[in-house]
Amino acid sequence: MQQHVYQEMIQSQKTHWWYVGRRKILDKILSKLEIRGASLLEIGGGMGGNIDLLKAYGEVTVLDNNTIAISYLHEAFNVKVVKANFPEKSELYIPQFGCILMLDVLEHIEDDNLALTQLAKSMQKHAKLVITVPAYQFLCSHHDEVMHHYRRYSMSNITALAESNGFTIKYKSYFNTLLFPIALITRTISKLFDSIHRIEQNSEAGVINSMLTKLFSLESALLPRFSFPFGLSIVLVLEPKDD
Image 1 (spheres, rainbow, N blue to C red):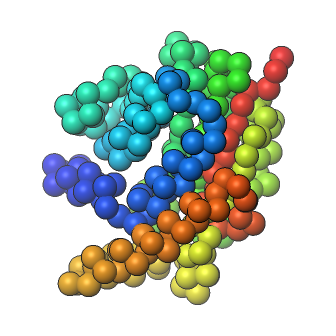
Image 2: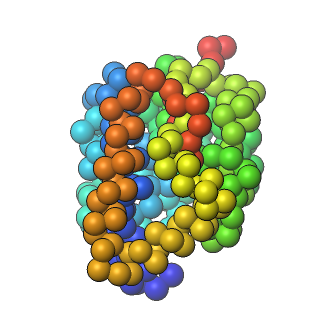
């Protein structure tokens, strides 16, 4: 990708309603896990949009295989970065972490069974794995193709996948629920994102982004005390099963 694309990604992760809202939900979930002071690993950290939040809970390491992202993460956040193609050789680095996060990463991995199996085998006893994934295969669209998603998930298939590959489910919920009707009305996620993209080209982009941020962020007041029965995304908190 060209340099300006990375700059756009950095700015988007800071201010875009989806990233801002997801961070607020993630913060609420992490605050209930009693992990402060733990060593945290974010697999697929992108351009570091979650690092400042994660640093509030412990020492952060990021795993990525993108050279430009790794260089930026070192410079901008002064964090340790593991350069690797997850899940290859994951047993060499996974055991040292008390909390591992895969935030909209699993759908990018062709063999999701292997990814979860390797994690379950390598993680510490009682370590936490926090996963977010996009929901509902029927919402798969051109946007998913552009983002190189292999799939979207239902709650039943992601929980079955986790349990069959060595995990116990500690918490599960859909989220991005309040905006779900918009996705249904527009029929596809791609139409939703295309509409938002067009909105962001005009002078009202800041206003619209602010409105969507506030709407999405309302969910953080309810999670994780409650679980939503539907939504555009899914969040799971997992632990490796005891042998």
